[in-house]
Length: 165
Image 1 (cartoon, helix red, strand yellow):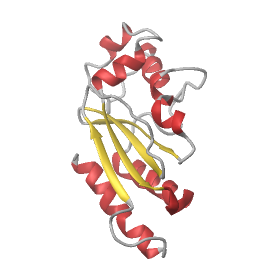
Image 2 (cartoon, one colour):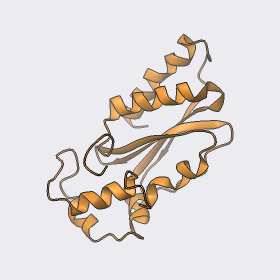
Image 3 (spheres, rainbow, N blue to C red):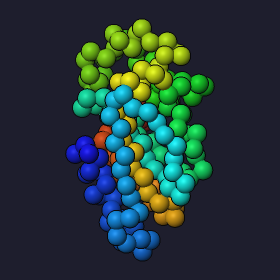
């Protein structure tokens, strides 16, 4: 497991107990899918935070509740209408003039040749995906807390108010 993902898990583990929601460790698990990866269904009874990584760069962290199977499975692999998705953010980055120093220096050129239909397969072929799953009985507050911890530790590039992302 990536060191940073372990940091997220360690910081979150105390939260359910401190809030009287759960004790122990059976309420959390991690799935690390190295590149090339294949996204799977969100397991019944679970919710989670997904994190996309390329090298030392963290691209996107997001959450999916227990009734958000489509978001978990395919949302960030297709640009669609919401350019805030990872696919759209990468395609926008490929067209922008300024480099982001947090991104791998050799990323722009390969992305410039990727089409709308090809960005999903590119993401699966080139990025690792780290899923942090928690029991859905912990509720939305726990899921939001886990996502906030992931954002604070991983500092994903395609989060926040960056132009078009």
